[in-house]
Image: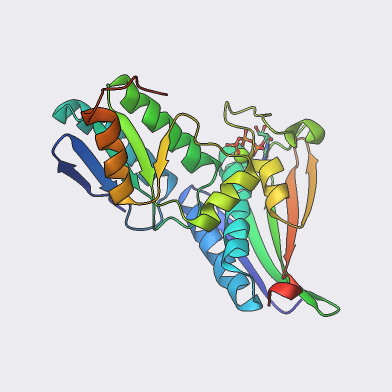
Length: 125
Length: 137
Ligand SMILES: Nc1ncnc2c1ncn2[C@@H]1O[C@H](COP(=O)(O)OP(=O)(O)OP(=O)(O)O)[C@@H](O)[C@H]1O
Ligand SMILES: [Mg+2]
């Protein structure tokens, strides 16, 4: 299942459309990292609203992706983690350390604007 | 046992199939959405372990009744290399695959009951159960 990646100014927005296999998730990671370089994007939003499971693999992959993107000088925000999914991640012991999260796309965009457009705060804090 | 479904596991694609099937089978029992997510996530972890460490195996789902309570039993079985030290494997952060080492201990926390049998050279069998909470219905 292909994840469409939308370029919007300095940002890239990836909206996951259906459950993803491990291979799909790895492809998304590679695509996003490549496009951040290609477009010199400054922020990336990954919308996971439709995901009803985020297990250790998904979490590890998203975390690794955010770190790779950070090394390219951009920030990643994961938006739309469902309450049940958040609960299950906590039970599993999973943490999205070093990755920003926001409630939805709108908040994610606001967060990026805040961190990138204003002030140019240090990354990874 | 009133039902049994088994899904052969041999590639990462089967992980998605297995957890969807688990959710599908558990839903009519009256589990909450959160509980269904916990079950699906636990299935995801044990099936991924089969793919990662044993290459192939099987995931079976059963509906159980005990007195007036109902639940789902998830059995993940493989004839892979087995686990030499189960106690160690059940610890948070222990991984031979340079991963997070949360799959097994995490799945145990997500479910109500968790049993693991493993023999080196013969394989691994994990049986986990989740009961429908009566007061939630
Ligand atoms: N079916 C299996 N066959 C053989 N060894 C297994 C099996 N399942 C788990 N193991 C062993 O137990 C260890 C712990 O498993 P666990 O799922 O907790 O962590 P992980 O798979 O290493 O990391 P994570 O699940 O967090 O990505 C594994 O590293 C592996 O050595
Ligand atoms: Mg695992």
